[in-house]
Image (spheres, helix red, strand yellow):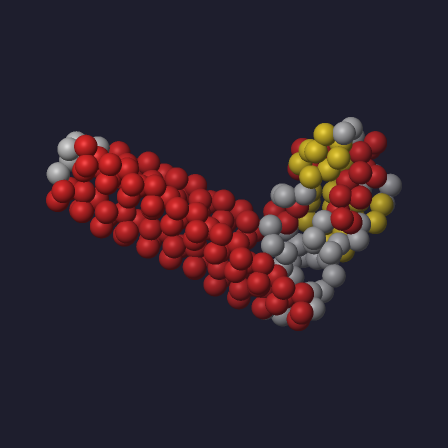
Length: 185
């Protein structure tokens, strides 16, 4: 029973780490990447639609992004969504594609992105701690109901702490990597 609880908690923590990786990838650095546009939604005929479903995104050069809409009629809405996003980009219409030249990040903007990365990391840590608490509550309930012994319950809690610490360390290493990437000029 404890093993099932621990496996479930570990699976959820692994998913939380993957979400944190995606969140960090969406933070802009000096290099252009398609992942930066993962969270942008476009008003497509009245329905919010992910940009990646409406256009192909390619990065031919380190600081250039090309966005080719599948539906040419959606180009204006895509351009509007890009301008209104927090990426600070200004797309230009080349006829068939939208071209985005990524501006050089200022020192102030880099610090803002580092702060954003720290906020996202803390949100991920909070999620992990909440998962730990839910797992501990399930273990405590199993001990209280007599399904497992107290020794097994305390052993399960120790394993839960080890799991939580391991996943928090992964989040911390992702954050430090993102900080280095952001502060690199």
